[in-house]
Image 1 (tube, rainbow, N blue to C red):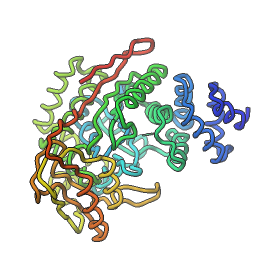
Image 2 (cartoon, rainbow, N blue to C red; image 1 turned 45 degrees about the horizontal axis):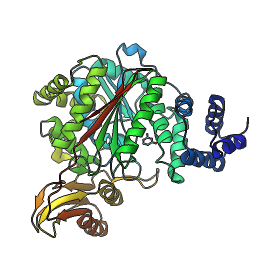
Image 3 (cartoon, rainbow, N blue to C red; image 1 turned 60 degrees about the vertical axis):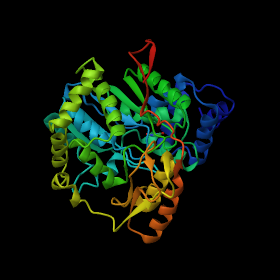
Image 4 (tube, helix red, strand yellow; image 1 turned 180 degrees about the horizontal axis):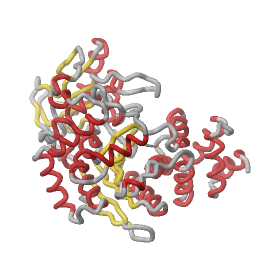
Amino acid sequence: MNILDIIEKKRDKKELTKEEIEFFINEYVENKIPDYQMSALIMAIYINGMTNEETTNLTLAMAHSGEILDLSNLNSIIVDKHSTGGVGDKVSLILLPLVASVGVPVAKMSGRGLGFTGGTVDKLESIPGYKTSIDMEDFIQNVKNIGISMISQTLNLAPADKKIYALRDSISCVESIPLIASSIMSKKIASGAQKIVLDVTVGSGAFMKNMESGEKLSRKMIDIGNLANRQTVCILTNMEEPLGLAIGNSLEVIEAIKFLKGEMLEDVKQVVLELGSHMMKLAGLGENLENNKIVLLQNINNGKAYQKFEQLVNKQGGDISYLENTDKFEKASIIEPVYSNKDGYITKIDAKEIGKVACRLGAGRIRKEDEIDKSVGIVLNKKVGDIVKKGDIISFIHANDYKKMIIAKEEIENIFEISKYKTDSIPTILKVIESYGKGKKIIEKNI
Ligand code: URA
């Protein structure tokens, strides 16, 4: 077998066998295939796509390219959660302590942000002292003792995905359904998940720009889940405008802490409750989704979800005085309001564009090796559908560089679209797609 024949086959729209897929994954991880040949193959996959069978074989080959975490000694059903990425997405920080507080064990490995989308690990590291790299034994022990641990992906988890993702990013091949589906599902399988809830974001700030591609990606991941024996539920959520108000690392952590203390923003609340109710169902803690949402809300209102987050932060070395008093988080040196330049209704706040502005302020990485500035970002003061008057504050810029702040201010003024006609805001939860196992029908429910 050789890589040239495999490239040629995919270039000519032919289906690759399991052996061919395993060959190029293993050889690439061992540096026996150079980046230029892998780039040609990835581009051929991007253009010609993959069948379900090929995508599943790619997923399994990538999952088995490193260690597979064995969580069986936890003696519980491990339900994992993953988002396909977004702007202002602080859902994991809220949802995971919340579901842990009702008894869903959480053993979560997350990634860092790249480009305009943020990453949970960077956000957790905004809490002084919080360690995202701990021993595997401590990770498992924390799940046993307090029901939750949240860390960064270990180096040897799906190493093929790590290499291929970086390559895709450098050759403009990220937005491909088989490549995204296999990238996400390989990491979930390698990290020991038995059941999986996926937040499939749809809109300008997501990889999937419209419902059609969001549905296609969801069906693909459910098919892989079925073939790999991992029950998978996809919740399609709106990422046309940023989620919640804060975009930026410590700013999002502060919003998450406030949520857990009961200050719930409506769009964040809807995503958290929808995903949480499905996680409870998959963990065997309640068949009725509406009842599950009531149980989750109770644990916000009685403080148990917040206490669980405090326990998690404490256990991983974080300073919980920052949770008790969020004013302690280091602030950016400049906090500048942005004003509306006319009267009307907000009709659009393009999530991707806002994410890019936050990234340029220093909240995100343009290249993998970039340092991020935890304190900078944007806090929206208005959302789509809100009425504004000329001179009203539409957002605040948190910056540590005067020139960058001035540029951001001009950009944000243009990103907020204001019209004299009110437009209906887009619902937050767009659709749920699930299946009850191999050979079972996929069920699609519009919300
Ligand atoms: N998230 C991932 O983990 N992989 C992708 O390819 C895209 C989003």
